[in-house]
Image 1: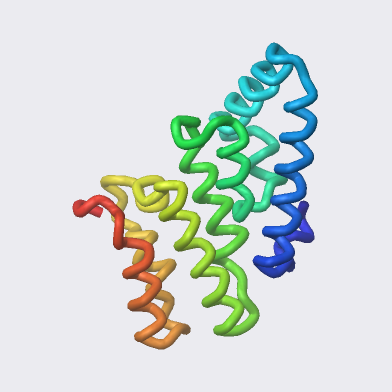
Image 2 (image 1 turned 180 degrees about the horizontal axis):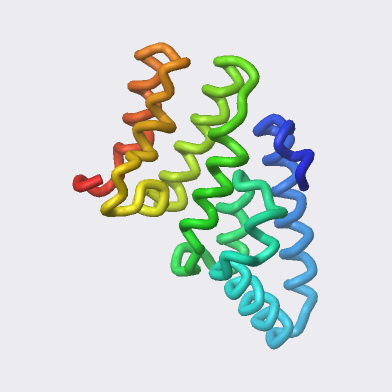
Length: 158
């Protein structure tokens, strides 16, 4: 939902949790073949860069979405998802507090979905992680905290 950009994390959590419960209810009351069919279709959508999932689903709901189709082994299109994270969370913020809150959510997603390399592809000279989370409009302490949060579990070569 495009308006979800302006929702608080609590509102989004409630909405995403409600949608997850609704989908689980429908799946539990479906035949096993219908359940697998839905999950297969969802996995294909998650792996397809051109899928509506990448343009219509708020990136903050992606962890729940991935878990609906049996979790961590599901292949996400990391490049497409990172572009959406940049658009939805890293390119906005009318003031420093809103920008910081958005960047904190982006850092949490990168960590939770293990998107370090997709956000900053190997061989890239753009240093996207440093440019994004080292935003000089934030004070040094906040920038340091964000960088630590993003890079704590990242591969060393990143």
